[in-house]
Length: 283
Ligand code: GLU
Image 1 (cartoon, rainbow, N blue to C red):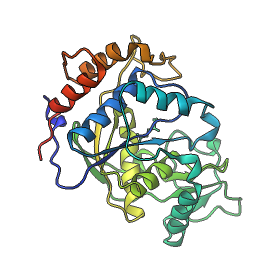
Image 2 (image 1 turned 180 degrees about the vertical axis):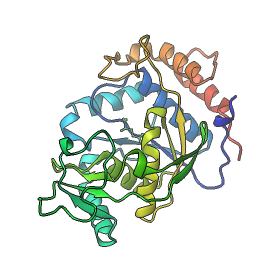
Image 3 (image 1 turned 120 degrees about the vertical axis):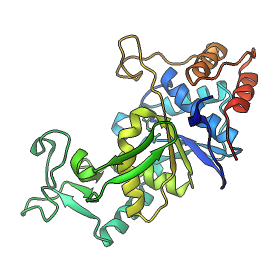
Image 4 (image 1 turned 30 degrees about the horizontal axis):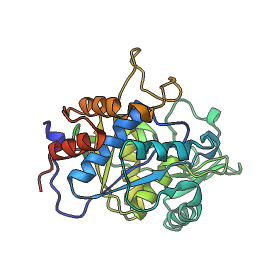
């Protein structure tokens, strides 16, 4: 077993799976769900499910129910209530207010076409020159954000150079994913974020935001991303197929194999029990 499956647990473990209900679960999301479930269960911890529908215009009616039914069909049972981000606006507003009071954020008048490329150059950091503010951004730290990923090792990122100041409240009035995920991980006491490596890019931003809010950031484990034959990440955009509960055995077997775990049981519950025992956690 690879070293990234080893974790020293000295405190209670709380993990989570945080799908965006923009469509049904596909094989890539099954791998993400399984990885975080296994890490939590092997640590004797809790595993929470959070519906990340903060970007409401992108969400699809009924996707939430379909995702929860699929998790149940694949025996990925969660602890407690499912937290739904569209019902958490007061908590996001309170976090933004705190950041305003402490001078971490500023109103920004720039539209997408005022910004060349993906990096915000800090145009409105010291005022909007009389233009009306459209969004709110957090001033990213000048010093590098340093973090450790349990599989991929150590990272150091200067956010001023990679992305610049991060949007927390969007011009269309919705809170940004980066704020919602950080506020919710802190509110739910999440100790371990286990997710696909496509979200590695967001990690330094989220750590900076946790620090600005006075939180201790969680540990991180980014798992390999499943790609299709054309090398594209499985997603709704690349037309990944929904996972069917009638294929739960075969798909669970394949997803575990993708995570480096070969099991020989015949049913899903037994496969998960075997995989949990093999997902090594050093305590
Ligand atoms: N909701 C995000 C997604 O589905 C995942 C967020 C996370 O795991 O931090 O891509």
